[in-house]
Length: 185
Image (tube, rainbow, N blue to C red; front, top):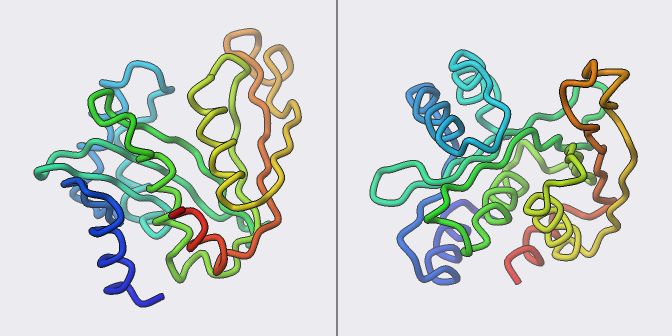
């Protein structure tokens, strides 16, 4: 779907003042502040967010309202698995929740040429992160795809007891061309 058609569809399907776009280098520190303010996510260094906004911009998305960043999804395509989008972090400011913004940000990434060969989404989630479980179940449902989970990075083995076990979530397979349309529904 051409970018202008996607933008037109977004403006009519969502009656709000939110703009979703690919990040740029200038957004790195703003993303870092958004994640830090959320106080529920693991903080990366500002340099990491700068790299995400530059080197990995094509697999990241941010949402703005009135020029202020209110949502962020970082992701990448693992070199050994070019058919997978790994969603690293989802952050939506509290006052912007309830608009399916996390799902909209993921959809924006999936609709890009960079993701034309994507057939699976991966992420990791701790057992107690109800918001993330809900989001990724909704994404799987929208993509008409299965969701599987398994312990991945374990509390004692990988985190020396300092962090809960992260479960690997796999959504797929799905057809990204069909999926981009269905996610909007």
